[in-house]
Amino acid sequence: MTTRYLGQFVVTGILLGSIACSVSPTAPEIDQELARQAEDELKSVAGQWWGLAQAGAVSLVFTLTQAADGRVQGNGTMKEIGLAAVPIAIGGTYNRPNLSLTFTAIYQGREVAGTVVATNGAFGGTTGTLRLGAGNDTTSLTLSLGRGTPPQPSLGGRITDAVTGAPVAGATVSVQGRSVLSSTTGHYGFNPNLTDGRFDVSVTHPAYVDLVRTVDIVPFALTDFKLQPR
Image 1 (cartoon, rainbow, N blue to C red):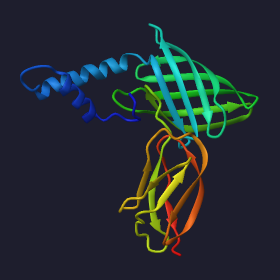
Image 2: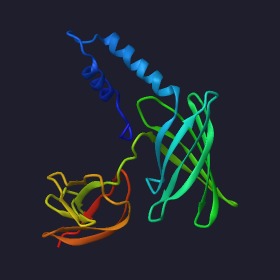
Image 3: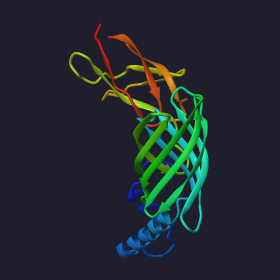
Image 4: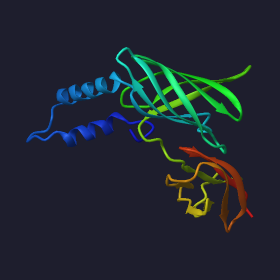
């Protein structure tokens, strides 16, 4: 799965395209195939995973293997926005549909212990809790998990007039040496493949005061801008 959430309509489209027959599949046949795929999806958590917490400020990428008794182990990396990724070692259990993981890492010179408690669901993202602890310091973050290739950093949002709230069309939004124009509805968006981290984003328009703001570039980042008229 290469997207954060894979809707059933996408799965249905793939199913329809993969059934080679002279007549269209019936609704019961589609339901049966979807049920079979869901069952396969829930049998094992082995494979590549990614996770995003704190609006993408903390990211995880890891690979799991699963034993017959449900024990899980693996390794990967954890990264906080603006800092280097650190390796993590993972252990845990998968008692369908409950996925419990523990991992350890050395982060900024301190040993960090983490736990992930989530429910594995078919055809979609998994939401759980990431609990991090280092010494007496602990924090709990909502974690979104997905299977497959991790999403790339991106940026999108809407530009409006700070006085009237009307959309601003034709504004130039620039970051990392790339620029896009806002649409007639004020929306803008960069394709993925940006570099993650904190970067200055500039917004310019002949009728408005130039604006520069530091933004966290992470997967699915959304940032709106309000421009002051000149």
